[in-house]
Structures are given as C-alpha cells and as structure tokens.
Length: 449
Image (cartoon, rainbow, N blue to C red; front, side):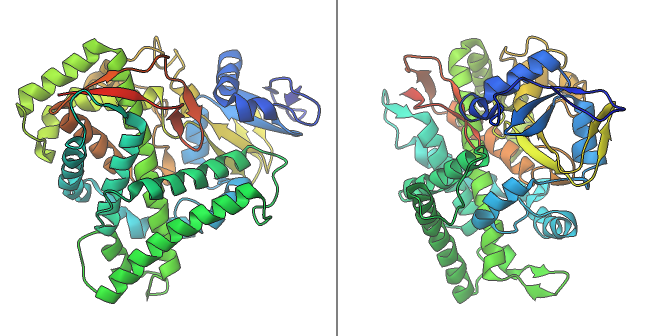
C-alpha cells in the first residue's frame, strides 16, 4: 500500500495486519521497526498505526522542512498533548505558537552558555561526593547511579535542594509516570487516563508524590522570600510579559517539572551509554583518560579546563549519536504540506527518529562503530546539517542543550580523574526504547580506583 494523492509520488510503507497495522511491532520492537523502514526506504517510508499511515522522515532535508522551514505547520500531536498535559500542563515542552515563544523568552536566559557555566561547580561537587560512596572493587548498577547523580544535580540547580538520600524515591516516581506515558502513547486502544485501572491509579499516585515535592519547594521559597541563586528563585521573580503578573504556582510547577524531567533522565541515560561504550572500547577509554591526566593531573575540572579536554566532549557527542536519549518524536501537520515530491495531508502524524538518522551510512560511514573522531572540530564542521539531532532543531530545539553538554563533559572528566569502570555484565547491553532510550536491565560496573 502507499500513501499518496493522484499527482504525487507515493510514500512507500511496510505491510501491516488488518485493523492493527504495525502496532505490535511499534510496541514491542520499536527500534527494529524504525530501522527496517530506514534500511528499506531511505529518506522516507511509512508504517501503519491501526488504520492510519505514519511517515517516518529520515533525511536532513525533510527534517529541516518540518522542524525549521514549516515549523508553524507541524505541531505536537494530539496524542502527545492528551497524554502529556495531565503530567506537564501547558509547559514549554507541550505549548505551541505564541505561547511557546513567550515561555521560551521567559526561560531561555537561564540556559544561555554564560549562565550555564555557573552550574559547573554544583555538577563537579555532586559527582565528587557520589563517587566517594563507592568502594574499591564494588559492583554498582551504573544506570541507577547516573540517574541518582543527575537527579541530585538538577535538584540543586532548580531548587538549591540537597536531596542526597531521598532521590531514589523521587526517581522511581518519575520513572513510573513516564513509562506509563510512553506505553499509552503507542497503544491505539488505550483507556482514558481518568479510568481507575491499576496502572492509571499507580501513575496518578506517582505523579501526586512528585507534585507534592515540587509544590512544597515552591511554597517554602515564597514564604522565605529569599533569592538562593537557583532556578526556582529566578522563576518566582519572573513576570509574564503579556499580563505583567508574577507566575502562578501551577505555571511555575509546570515549567519546573518539565526541566526536572528533561534535566536528569536524558543526561543520565546518555552518560550510562557513554560509560558502557568506553568499557567496550579500551583504546578510546585510554585516550580519554590520558587527555584528562595531561590537563588535570588528578585535580577536579573547572569550566576553564573544558576547552583543553576536546576529546572528552567528542566521546560524549558520539555516545549521543549512537544512543540519542530522545530516539524518536512526532509532529502533526495542521495543513497539507508538500515535502519534496511527497504529499502530507492535513492531520498526518510524522515521525523523526534521531536513532535511525544517526545510523545512516550516507551521513556517518561505518555507522555502528563507536568513533569519537567524527566530532573532532574539522569533521564535525563537515557533517551534513540536520543529520545529527540529539537535541532536535528549530524553534523547539532543546532549551537545556548547553546544560546537557556541559554536564556530560564535566562528569566524564571528573570521574575519569578518580576511577575506572569495568563492565562485569554477562551479556551485551540492549537498548530499551521507553520515553528515552534506556539500557535494558542493570549496567553492572566494577569500580577501580
């Protein structure tokens, strides 16, 4: 079958089951489905989501048109809004149009490169304190520890809150909420979120715990009326330009929760993949360690050191290429659109998958190979624009991009000065495409001082 009108080139698509299409593959073998479309069709192909056909855009040119040139026509889909709004409200993550531009104007100053550098000391301090709790020869679940670390860092940055020790409970609540979200998003037969099913009830309880934590922080700060130099203090002082009113507690909660989720889950996942890849490629690990030894000689890094640690950042960027935390996302067309020779009707959901895009040999030769030299300055400059999308592109590009790159760079440099990780798992690690691209199961590493 093909997705077309009478005067346009048909979009090739995979065969599917009657009524269900490719839903079961989408739910159970999502990466394989996306990779199959990429391998068989190249720049554009489609799958069946129930009776609907969903194009997958896999070329920098089409991606530029959707995310940049015609971004006003392609919005967050109705499904994402329906499932995301009860969790995140109309935050910058879900808003569109003028509302989105207004929110970005409010939040963007806090994420400018110069401002983000102020958070470096927090990142290094939290990392140093956590690694001191690991004993020589101890086996740790690295995925769990990276989640703890980034949750601790984002809590200090957002709330000036030291939650060392209570972060596991908060992390579990967030993880369950977003696993539930991801599962519902790919189920065409999902029940309303308001129905009291066991899964819905558990997700609501987890969200209630997260809400209570955040609202408590907001109230404490309003009562204290003191500026502690954190993001929450700034946000409580910020004014909505349109109405010149101080933001409501709910508006603050929505933005804080969006940043809270994005600021720990995505970076923790990227760092976990990074350490795993290093453990499997000792020559890369050794080169990164030698760079750190030469520049730092055992001391902790600062922001001013980072320009002298380029290979460490290349390692992080290459890990994001192979395992982008946001491995796929959707946009919905609000009007008919022509993409090259292909026609996209109004109301069509399209998928963009950084995971498959980053694995196209056309843009990244020998794409499965872990090769940080791809991001050496000259090679990175020569990459095809929009072929590398770990943070998206266009008006909705990730607000925290500089924050994430700084955090990944600093945490790698800090831990490399203190210890080595030896992978002790019995099987190669497989990716699990939930809301982010997490490693499946535990990532067992032995700590070597």
